[in-house]
Image (tube, rainbow, N blue to C red; front, side):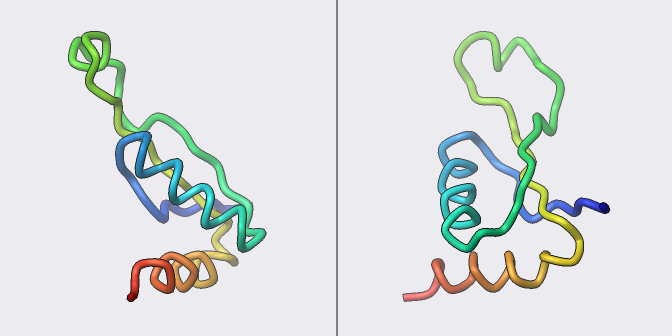
Length: 70
């Protein structure tokens, strides 16, 4: 299965994206997108990457766009 990135950001944003994907039954994987740096050690968040299966990318994109629109 090929995984593609749907979002990169800090943990609070990633948690929101994960909840939307869970609600839509879209599988996802979250991983650290950058190396652990002194900034991360001293309280700044690392950057995370949320990935979805390639064949579900369009579904995930639509789900995120629907939640973003008023």
